[in-house]
Length: 240
Image (cartoon, rainbow, N blue to C red; front, side, top):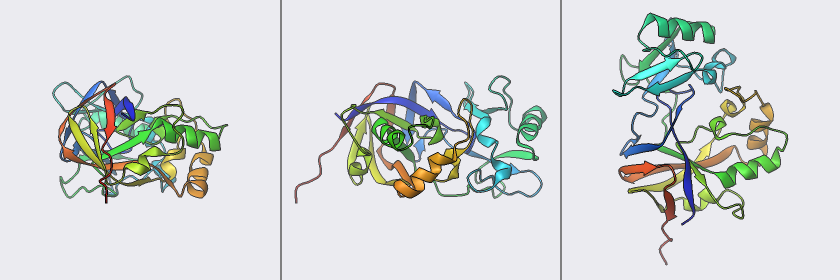
């Protein structure tokens, strides 16, 4: 056993704040309901890209979640929730963002994400501690890095242990993942979020001292259920 699931996160709308879960179903495409929708400029059709253009910088300060029936809900303040197709939902977000916003399901009406995402993004507390040591004055939180799975690893575990899991089977609950490649970072990690200030040092240190990477992308080998507190076990590499 390497560690345990400390947090499970789902982000129904790309670039908006997500929801922390007690349990989640992993399906072949990833965590069910994760990043199914995106924010677009309602007039130009351009997909939002917070890590590249200043006009999108307010997106992480709004929120998304799934309702009991599995439908997407959005909120500009974390208190009043709306169907994203309703005028109330889009008007509140447009005021928050400063541009006419539209939320669209990917693949509908030609809507495409700005990049091809991996099924699962995993991050360890060891990786966060390692980055924190490099920028002790910064306020770090897993939300800056938007993992699906935050794995609590022992204090004695140093560095970024998830890099050693590339190509290996990772069992959590009754699901099995396989580590693929490190997660490349962008300026999104420096943007202001609820309770987190803007901090350009976060991205600067990631870029210059960490090769811009932190965390691990994974594929799903066996679908299943994952719960908060589940143990993470990594299969030993085959002997050659």
